[in-house]
Amino acid sequence: MPEKLPVISGKEAMKAFEKAGWTLIRVGSSRHYIYKKEGMTTTLSIPDHKVLDRGLLRSLIRDSFMSIDEFCKFLKD
Image (tube, rainbow, N blue to C red; front, side):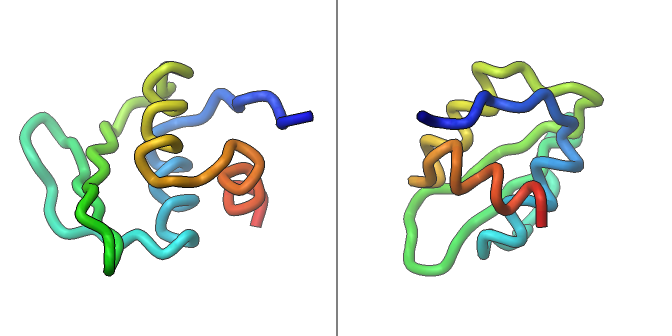
């Protein structure tokens, strides 16, 4: 059974995606951090919020082609 989606901040999400191989390419408008992974055409725009909405986090995980379980492993490391 998949792990429950955690309630985390934008900074925590950024750290987890960096561990998964995503690299910061620039800081966009309104402090949205733009990440890209080599070999992928998708970019992730992660806002620097104190708490990310679960729907937004689920969308970011889906856009990164990871499962919630995989993301949670990078979050715990």
